Length: 525
Image (tube, rainbow, N blue to C red; front, side, top):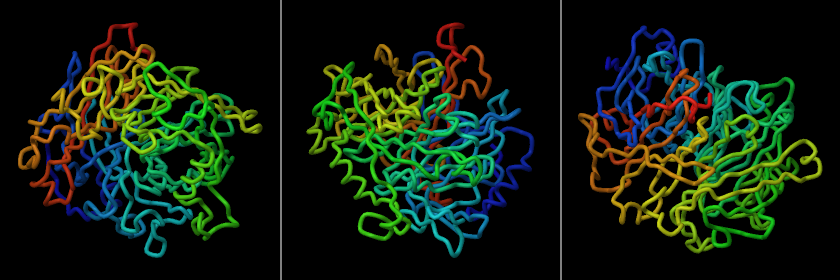
């Protein structure tokens, strides 16, 4: 790889200028793959944390991603899940300097899948009040120093799910975190207070013809113990700014309540079982109450007040909601898959330790909104606590994607101390058939792949490394006769070398994983 070093405090404006003037040649990492493919799947690493492309050195902890097809290239944007005060400082166009979580842009040649350039994905942030973050207007977020742990993400292209712009939906994975949407074209990141406070893991938009002409509907994974499944419904404005025209500025927040009164996995568990329920509206905005005990200075509900409403309406307490993704099949855009990674709480009484994967079938239209009757049937397609599964099946499901071959690809992230104790298996990527619940391990972390000059401080700590951010990029790269996924790794225990000298926090890598497909079987393009 060609290494072009710039000081780590290089401004975003300079980095973007370098990216757009990049030489026409490809970059490739010289480091081995941190994930090995299994069952005919092959991994191909393209960039390793600690390397530099066109003057840009992205930090570690890569996470949620989205892919956007252009004429000859594919642009993939990627979160970095840094805590607010970690990582080297970067500078916005306004001159404001921040640390913490951020988003990078990777540009690939569509025909060859070679990495052409990298750069920051934005140079402007609009805070919860809609003001551009500068010396006078702070983030107004969970930490004034920077964004806090941008985790997984959902992406939409213009014309999909009611959106009029390409966007990445993400948020801060912390108690009371703020949701954000990245305007891909403008390079601007917008806070989304109308979507409520949460420990944002991810968000995914429902693709519903007709309804999406005027509204958007977005499911949110709130990555906290005993959290509700959240639904945001927003009305689009015909003009206005990015969040107004995409329905993200004004809307209603809902929580799912089971019809039979089930409150947690202690009441409902097991592969193949299901519950019907309703999304019940909660109060997220009250201008008249701005600055009072339950509302912030803008009139939006505090996390504590939203949590109290969860209890009062009897919302279902999922063990720890993680990633969410919409079914890409035609006519199935009202379905999502989501993972709850598992956690022992006083409410669920240890009924969901190994994690559960659900499919949610939402019934929503304008008429249902008017009569307050947005419903959803939720089915368990894989319960990791079933007898015979546990440490020998999908464990601690975290990031996932519902790919266009109809399969769900799931990444593990150790969440309990007994992870790997019986199986001795490292964190993996699995393929799940949501119709039959059949599973197959297709990839597994390789702890020997420590980059040159870097050090794994805990090589025997099974489950320390994880993969994340998985997306299906088969169509974006016009791949024929194969399934192509893109993901990253978080090598949490890897440091020293450039990780330390450049203040990148942790090691990691970006990779493709692919497998040939038999024509007519799973290649649903």
